[in-house]
Amino acid sequence: MIKEIIISDSKDISEGQIIELYKANKWSAAEKPEQLHNALRNSHSLISAWEDDQLVGIGNAISDGYLVVYFPHLLVHPDHQGKGIGKKIVDKLLQIYKGFHMQMLTADKEAEAFYQKVGFQKAGETIPMWIYEGNEH
Image 1 (cartoon, rainbow, N blue to C red):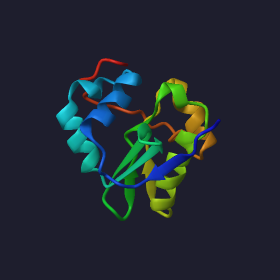
Image 2: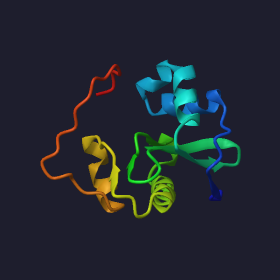
Image 3: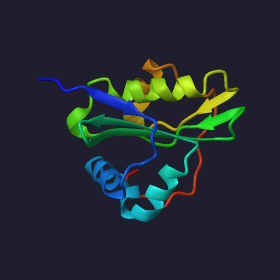
């Protein structure tokens, strides 16, 4: 039986639930649990996906609130990928920031096709650049 996935904009998510999801996806941010929890809770928007009381997906936005929004995180638990959960999260975020002048994200190569499918395109000759302390790239 397929259980219903609930999409929420509540920032009331426990650190443990967040860390479990990030570890399942092997994201290095899980190594900094307090900072990650605070970062997500202080995002301009935080959208989560739930199956009963299990966090199965999350996406966030950092924004000036008027012109520019950046979507740094989108994760779906590996056991729930391919079921449309990521699309639901992205759709909700795009609804919130509809009409913004610039909506940006950085996609790993394996996620590029997904983001193109939900409306993003390569930013011309733009090259993403960073100072990064993670280890999964």
